[in-house]
Amino acid sequence: MTSSRLPAALAPWAATLSAVSPELALALGPLLLRLDTLVGGHEPVADTTGEPDGVGGLARTGRPDQLLPSEWLLADEFPDEFLRRLAHGELLHLATEFRTPAGRGRIAALVDTGPTQAGAGRLVQLAALLVLHRRAAARGTELVVGVLGDPSGRCLTGELAELLPAWLAARRAADPTPEDVRRSRAALDDADQAWLLTSPRLAGRLPAQPRVLTGEPARWSADGADRVLVRLDGAAAELPLPTGDIAVRALRGTEFRRAEPTAAARPGRRWATDGRALPAFPNDARTLIARGAEPGTLLAVNLPHPDHRRTLSVRARRHDLPGPVLAAGRMARRLIALHVRGDRLVPHVVGRPFGEPGGYTVDLADLDTDLDAVSEHFARPVLPLLREGEDLLLPLSGRWWRIAPDGTATPDGPAGRGTHDREQFNPFREPRLFTMPLPLFEAVGSRHFLHSNGTQAWSDDGRSWQVRDELGKECRISFREHADVVGLVTGREPALITSSRDGRTVRSVRADGVRTLSRFSGGLGPLALHPSEPLIAVEKEAGLILIGDAGTGRVHFQIGSTQ
Image: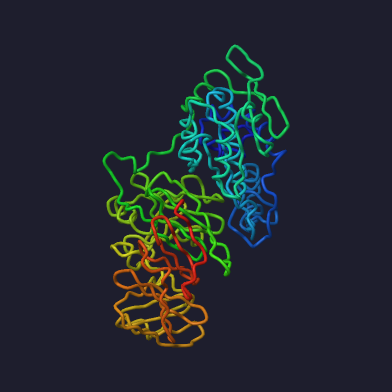
């Protein structure tokens, strides 16, 4: 929904209200604004803005000194157009990036979908979900919805157009209990901000806790309840409710703007997946991304600094996307994934908004591929997704593709193996990712070439390698066993990471010796090596991922089998 179709008071809500019809947006407006004021008075959007850390992109709001030079030129040459853009919020500003995000955790709405919340209570929950979604976007995080009493314990995730129908369909025949609330809170991450949306009856049975929002009818008219009493942490306010047909249609979901059907819903189509996690480090961020049990599920974890005294258990955040995931990457405060929907690739953004709604959506045919060819990648680690300027870069079908904000895809040079055949993508062998101006002359004619952090390694037979770091220091690394070189690790001394042909033995081979990485040997799938840091990961057992130092073999982190 565009801001031009909304009253001035609701214009800042255009992105959030695009998930509902214009009629429902107008009917919910008074309740939405009053509820947002009530919530904002008790819980600011951010506790801290963190330390400024340069420029993080473009924004349509900001201080005058953050305006782009081109906008000031427009003011000089075409002042009327400048004033028009200013009035409509169309001027572009430099957006400040912060070293520490204001909110690291998600906003989690724990909803009571029992019979006590039918009618007016559900309309209050709908407005609360819209308010919390907007606050999550302002914090650079995501909104998840947990249904109290749901046996699976899974949170609903995704875009708002996907969340609202799923929330509406999650009605339960019995009211939740205090134990259901305790279990739902315990399932959240420590950094998550939980909001409980329930009835006064259940809230009265709970110990004191923050962010408990309740609603009950306060006044009635011939069309039903038209005023509702909302309580939040001891404060109370009587707020207006939509009435009549629009309220009925909202409770039936007919006023929601539905998400497009996903490719996974096609009759008879089953995506190839064997249930392996297939961990990967898609880019230079300290983010491990693995696949879940379904092709549309991603597990992502930002790795902290290790505690060298012990192994830390870290918890991966689960993201359920509307379709099978092809590529993903962490970019500053965002996790961006490309998933298949119909015959197109569609972006899914977790964190700070990226581009305009519907942007970066590209037809598979424009990438010289089709659904059957792309489906082979769903049983491999996710492909890397990179950003260059305002464009996304994707290696697929034997070449790199540049995807513009309007969805235009143009070829941008050849890609290495793993983008059009059955081998997985290897960033260490990808010429495009080499950070030095040009490979060494001696390395150009070699059959094998690796790079990492400016260090180069090349070989003719795959066993005897010449290595030169970015300072020009050279050494020779060789081994005798029949093994494949997975990657190159730099540090005090460069090392080749090798894996035996049966995948059971992993070694770190240096010029002065060999170390067997026993904890990372014998995994269920391929190794994952970080492209610029000495990090290695492997799925050791079903659902158990070990992450550690690729040089020493020490395990620093583990993701348990409960993920």
